[in-house]
Image (cartoon, rainbow, N blue to C red; front, side):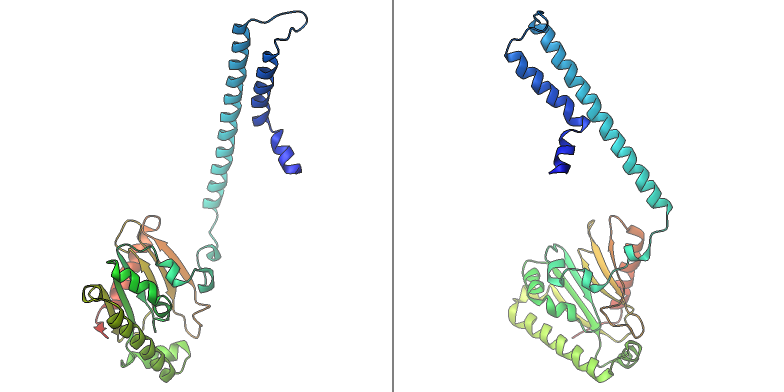
Length: 256
């Protein structure tokens, strides 16, 4: 209540309030010190008050804009902490929510495509509507799986089984739930290489495309690995670098 009262009596609100009061008093046809004011004088006074209000309001806006620009300039002069750029998986919405508004294409790259299995109903619905879907996992039969598992600190056989399980689930859902034309929009591939990143990308070739990139680190669980959200319109240079990295991950991939 106190903050509302303070806001009510700010300078920006006093002059408009004064205009209302004067307009109301005029309707009572008062005489001040025996002097009767003409309609023309009253109108000029009201216009004068409105002009004062416009000047105060404009100067207030300009002052606040100036302060905001000074704050932005100070922020740009300082180094940006990594914590304001790098995030963890828990800070993002679920995959199905992230990709729900895709129009052109969706790319998901991951060691075992766990994110894709969580969002499978949304992926199928997007494919039905004409969205191109590209999914890429590590080849469970490839030579690189052993080295990648060792880097991650997990049992290679457990990882191999998990990849196969997710791939078979995704493949069976695509084959059973989609028409032939919709299946042509979906690509489920595996690649025999150590993936340096995991990616969720939406409308990647469009002006408003974006990528969420997770860096795979040695002996670091996926929940703790750093992620970065890049947008084509605001981060064009880094966006293109990581989009090139996505294309490179698909090199030599085969259909599952």
